[in-house]
Picture 1: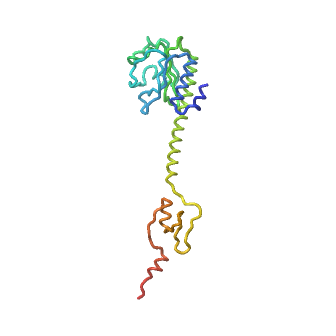
Picture 2 (picture 1 turned 120 degrees about the vertical axis):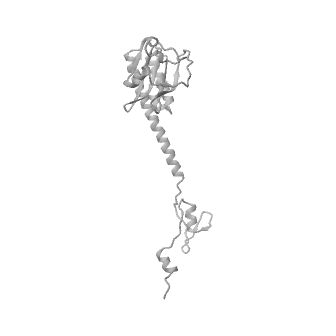
Picture 3 (picture 1 turned 120 degrees about the horizontal axis):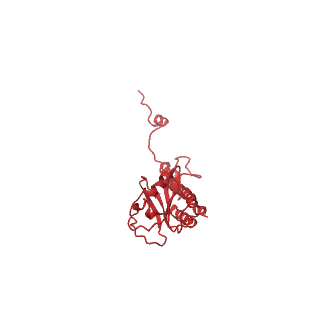
Length: 226
């Protein structure tokens, strides 16, 4: 089942491909793609394109703006289809070299009240119908959940890396530290005695600035008698 793909795949592109293949099989479509809305919301970024064995010479670097029947799916946040696409008002939006599309259907990926991507399906041997639209909508929702999970995992991994980096930079002192009862020197692991400041600096990120406490001022710098 397509839901298992969310847990089995490590990134959204792989998950989207599995979900798309299930959706294509259940609706009977032969061609299609999955695309995500770019950051400024002006166009789609295609994750992959399945031509279904038909010739496709379209330039892969061409932008995919939000227009035509695809725009209707974005605006309504629901699946839409056209069974006579080559004679429809939408056909003039097709770029040169695009795979022939006799019928098409678009199912949005809706996340938190916003359409963030789309599943495109085309070239079903028979007409698309409302049942196909319901199936595609379910898989669109499944893909949206997968996308959200992928983004959360990416964020979690980044936060984990940041934490591990921060922890690696932290030095701590622990255990029993041998210290001279008179001069307060500290013996290191090699048996050498070090000044307290040097030992702490070598084993932590602490730094010292020197001053004089009140008691030492009285002891070493007593006021001159008249």
